[in-house]
Amino acid sequence: MLGWIPKNQISKKIYNELSKINVGEFTTPINIPGGVMIIKIDDKKISELEIDLNQELKKMIQSEKNRQLRQFSSIYYKKIKNSAEIYEN
View (cartoon, rainbow, N blue to C red):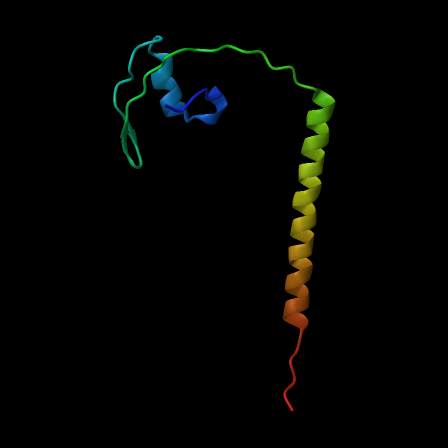
């Protein structure tokens, strides 16, 4: 038993198979990398999410800032590493 899974967190292949069946039915066998999967739908839940666009924008901006900072620090580290010289006596 998996529990509730948002549709954006499953593959399109599995979602397409799930959309073909009703509550209480099983899917046809679905080929996945580890073997075959058969899914039964016990219940469907529809919920509406309220999204704060300003909050989501702030998250995206922060994520992009962090990505760029990681990239810059990696470039700087590689530059320092390549220019470092070790002298032996």
